[in-house]
Image (cartoon, rainbow, N blue to C red; front, side):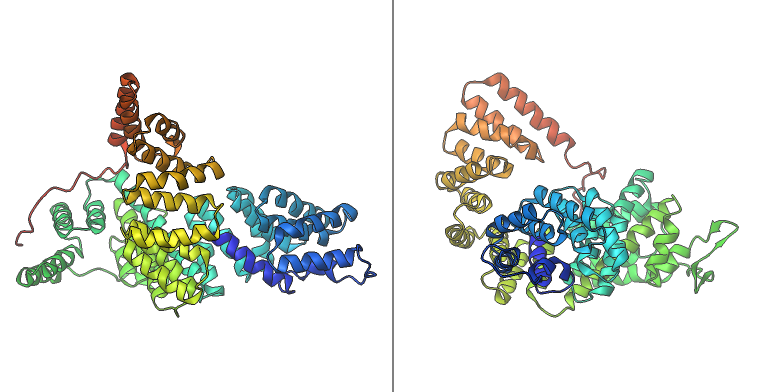
Length: 522
């Protein structure tokens, strides 16, 4: 988990006397060095924490807190050990206890915010993290955590603001640029959704639809629909020309490019140094477009957000998307590192480019060959790309290293299941749910595996358990099969009806399906 990895890095930094030297104040106090005195116990606790043995450090830290309840440094150490060992709720109690004793303790606020994020309570994380960023504006750890808290709450405008500041503080941090990219893409999506709801038949919306289409023929169709609505919309002829050129019709492309050149020129006369201007409270029709073409995206966004027109939502979506693309371009120019390749691997994974994702994980491993998290990411990408044998080999090695990891056993079982080895998949999947009964994806895969090998009664139990994790209704279909095979036709029919209902409401995309058409001449 990235948060925990960052915490380990921060912990090592703090224990070495960095940002929060107060963290080890108790460890350096000049008390008599008796075997069980506070100084000796503190020193041993610090050694264990520096070695990553947080479970072993907890009893020592706890003894110090019991003996010295008003010492904020001892309590801070206990909170940190609990946090790093995964006992987040108990860690929160200690960090809050530190702040009662010393309200100015910035490390306590930082780790309190991180613990709340790990607990899935980002709203509680924001106040302590905002306090740290106000006090130390150049603190990159606090700024990044605050941005992630806003992302978790879907407050993407605030998140983008924090990531933008983080790129100035830490310009070589790939996570900062990727966070900015993700936030701007989310804001572009929100603007596009507002446009869709306001004017689903407008040329502006149809252009955005076209830009999301993967196939040339589908994009061509929606661009043509947009031109039918607004023949003078700039950029559409150019986009169609690009499709023509990529499909081997350079002569048709030349015609569309000439049509683009013949459009009336933009009136950008009121786009001064201060950006789009308002005259008599009426914005010039071309102001947003002029600002966008001048790459003045912040001005487009700030002007458009006070309006509610198809044009304003369109240019706001385009501006946010352009900012996201700029951030992605910046990632491509960065010096190779394990962190950069991990970020790129996740981007490709989100885009369902699984082979590309696997290549990035492999590049990351060259920097840190023994990193368990990177190997896990590689195995997932390999499995999703269809390279089940390579994924299986990687996961079997990881399971040998961590046999009691529910997640690793689940990933191994799921890979075996997807490679049509359902009988071999059952043992690791069963172990996964035994280790972590609330790991719903493991229940889902185990139910599917049991169904494939004819153990339908057992399959029903796990498929029902996994229903809260069903995002497409497929589990209802699996349950219908299981109920029918066990002589329960009424329940089977109920599940099939729920499957059909889920399919009819899935997605929520209000765009009509792409028609099957041919790319035709201008």
